[in-house]
Image (cartoon, rainbow, N blue to C red; front, side, top):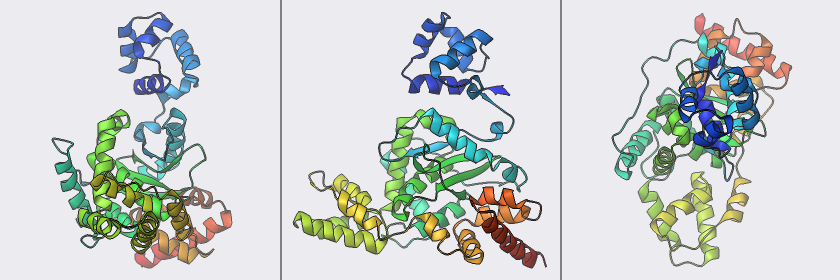
Length: 367
């Protein structure tokens, strides 16, 4: 097991304890704490005291050989949810279930990366334009979830659908597993809520900034800007703004709901973009957004629309072709239990049927 000093820094920051204060509490020098953060393992008594102060087991600050191949997950927080250490541990636990799958998979090879000199609006627009082009979406039309998944495929990003545990309050998270760029998607997420966080995690993937992005507000803000510009092209925002400008609030909400319903995006999202153009706009739309979402399914409902293994595998293959290919390549040697874990299926019977269908496709292609 290897000492992970970065976890000490993150845990201290989350608990509001500066590294200088930590040194004072432990009666060691500030340089000693710096050495711990940079990779030196604390002595046993210091380690136990650190664990007590941070309220985590000593093993939390170490990673085993499996975790060494899994990067620190990056999250786009949901609503007011705060990213904390428990959420990160939950995310790593999910990612670890796929370590063997990706270890045996063919290496991803060269993957697209977009680096820039400045995190400004001009560069955000350049990246957003490239992402929209790669998604195949029509000009001036907001991105829908189908084109967003097509974008992930074009960027060689593997997306995996899982139901997140209650403590992992997020729509999606990004990490690397054995060099593969992976976005885990919470199947409970409504498809209207899913587009923006998927784009956000995609920006993390192509920016390839690593763990530093977790605690960098400027990087998070830049990722948000790129995501907004990718989802909502400027001309579309202006078109919607012109349609509602000068109308009564009730009419504005109804028009926004119609635009959102027609183009399958969050009403809240377009309101935020219009406010960027018109800061004086006094419109919330929270209730209308909640009502709108009732008309659209979760991504899990899209996948599990009927209890039919053939339809499930067909939809999985369409929405996550890279994951499907990796899974298909190892399906003959995988147990039903392992397939159930990889597919996020609770019922062993469902997994057996799904595995049978994937094996059928694999055999047909091999023939």
